[in-house]
Amino acid sequence: MADNESSDGVILRGMQPGDAQRCAELEQILFPGDDPWSEAAFLHELTSPQTDYTVILDGSHPQQLLIGYAGIAMLGKPEDCEFEIHTIGIDPAYQRRGYARVLMDRFVAISEFYGGPIFLEVRTDNAPAIALYEAYGFTITGTRKNYYQPSGADAYTMMRQPQRTTDAAPQEQDES
Image (cartoon, rainbow, N blue to C red; front, side, top):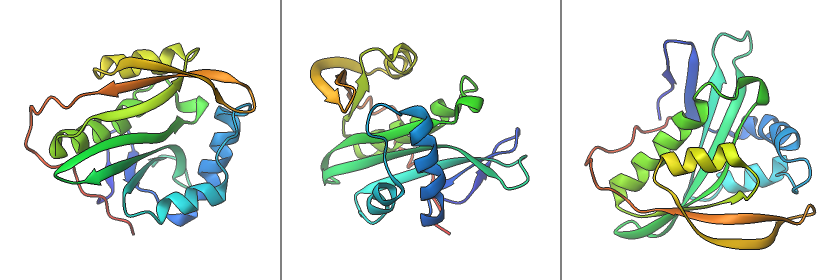
């Protein structure tokens, strides 16, 4: 996807290998008790042709600080696929500004384009994330006991069926 810059200086682009360290740092902040992803885990995810990882940068920051990231995987063939959100995170200093919605908009557009449902897991005690997902039409389909380790926290499995309201393709990401 080409870099997309909003009026507030936020840049949306495809994740690059050089972003993995910052994403791992944010994971440590956001998910300290739940086996946060390492830099190596992000790098591994980037090698899969079935995944799409996006980052959000603060373009007003002198170094264009990475403030958020998310990844989705396509499971199955494009004509009969489903999607799974692997991770989504926003720097706490930038939360509640709509950046998670920017990432979700992209994932929903991908799902709609291909016509496949999206699945995800979320901690049962993460009310803000659950509310966000419900606003996008996700419903709780089950509970996974002790899903997050080492904390032992439970997770809801949530799913969103495609609405097929648009035939527009999601914006392409430039990996450069």
